[in-house]
Image (cartoon, rainbow, N blue to C red):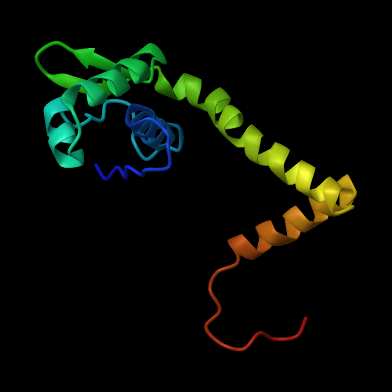
Length: 135
């Protein structure tokens, strides 16, 4: 599992929690997937094992992972129930920032929605292999 630790001031255990939570909520990690061992992830990240243990406890408290005695830590089967509400909670700050910025720039909500739809259509468009034909 590739986890990036930065020195941006956020506690290391929180960075681990955030990255694993995002992978669970986005579906990269699925129910039943095993997380790396505490010691293994700590060695990989070059952090104290207590830091990883604290991150795993936080994820367990959120019911995203569960410890199974003698076998390891796994993504919880109940995680999918929680992911819809967590996805909304994760995107809400970004929506707030977008709404704040759009209001500061003088956009009406209808204009913003139209811009989002236009950008979304561009994201879904398959890559072009030749010149576009006029429509």
